[in-house]
Image 1 (cartoon, helix red, strand yellow):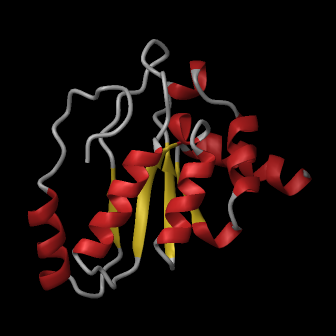
Image 2 (image 1 turned 30 degrees about the vertical axis):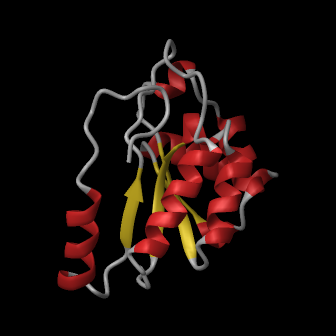
Length: 145
């Protein structure tokens, strides 16, 4: 789906992707998310209520019963915590996979942001896909707090 900040990448055809996942990989965890644009000049907003509602309606429309994880960019998530909490509430047994590019830690993202995200969701509902050095620093901060 098209996400925040007018990304230039085209989203994957959702119908084809979800039907193939349901029929060919019925026991797999499905990871779905938004195309985004993230650099220090482009961040204007995070994931909006409309984006979240549209995602939740897709899950219901396709009657997805497989485990789901929503891939979300950490730089955008920090502006959208309430909206993503709503998404996890609307889609029971779903999780977030929080990701970030290494360059985002130079300008858009801090360890404090990651700790705020961590404290805003239950520990079993958020997974992290980030550079190993960032994850190691993050683990130390979480352990010490």
